[in-house]
Image (tube, rainbow, N blue to C red):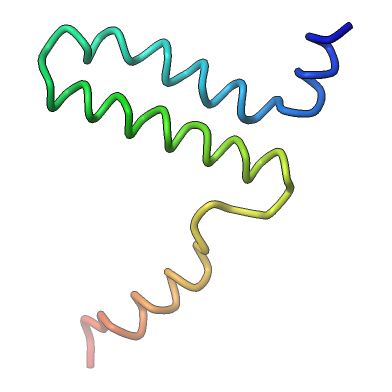
Length: 77
């Protein structure tokens, strides 16, 4: 019962953390800086999952980013 409620309310966070936990052992065997990268993976996985759970839209504002890049980089002026 508890696990089902947890899965229904925090599915994105759980999937993000599970993906990071799956990838972390690969990086943990290679040293300190890779362990720091593993911590970054955990943070990003949790954050993206949280955005998905709360229906806050995309983690990155892709439309605004595309418009900004289009205005900054015009190959044919």
